[in-house]
Image (cartoon, rainbow, N blue to C red; front, side, top):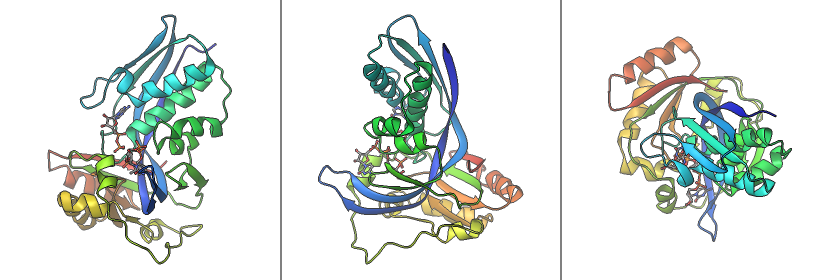
Length: 281
Ligand SMILES: C[C@@](CO)(OP(=O)(O)O)[C@H](O)COP(=O)(O)OP(=O)(O)OC[C@H]1O[C@@H](n2ccc(N)nc2=O)[C@H](O)[C@@H]1O
Ligand SMILES: Nc1ncnc2c1ncn2[C@@H]1O[C@H](COP(=O)(O)OP(=O)(O)O)[C@@H](O)[C@H]1O
């Protein structure tokens, strides 16, 4: 039996995020286009003879132990398996925290997928997604592992196969933005109808045609620097730019690696910002 597994847990960006309605439990029904990118945390999961779950992360703002969403994933699977196993989880965090990039959800999904293998539980992807949504609304997407149209609170996923690859420049101005705060402060507007999402997109410019995020209406007024970064990315040659999820990370889409790298270098001159040049997965 395998004793240890190392998984790359990718970040995501939201090409589109429409908020449809607030549910009685406070969550929101959404329609999102979700795309993984190759900025990854490294999650090492090992079985141990000592019972209990131990999570080491060592990143400020991310709890070690029970508060970590990866711990909750391991607990959920161990409870289901009824096995008194010990599990060690080490997370090397490369994805900025509370940034709208889904890092915690991706770590959580990696533990669900990895521990299912290590313990030989044989749970299906659908079963892991059902467990995942109870831990975080974005977790099922990272278990699904495909570019998706996400509905419900994010757990109803359909594959979107027609999206071309793109270069992505990420700029995180390192501001404290809580997802719960953003949803709480959102003023829902009545919409006549939802914009149509095409089945296929010819090129990066076509993706730009659907880019929109309702949560910008909350985060940008509180943090106008997000607008500045969007403008700067366009000035540096991005085909389009948008805030990802609840923010504050902004991404620009590029159809050329050279232009993306040049834009990354230009934006790195602000030393308070995290800047990364990555590709879609
Ligand atoms: C906005 C999005 C877009 O992909 O991602 P992030 O920007 O956080 O990465 C997601 O909707 C965030 O998903 P996730 O971060 O997993 O959310 P959870 O931990 O389940 O919930 C955090 C809080 O956000 C609010 N929430 C979340 C999802 C949703 N569909 N409706 C909500 O109202 C709830 O107030 C909840 O208490
Ligand atoms: N493995 C983890 N990685 C990142 N954050 C985590 C993790 N476990 C718990 N958290 C907590 O979840 C919160 C949201 O983190 P994250 O998933 O990075 O943000 P976002 O939802 O904006 O993508 C953070 O404030 C952090 O304290």
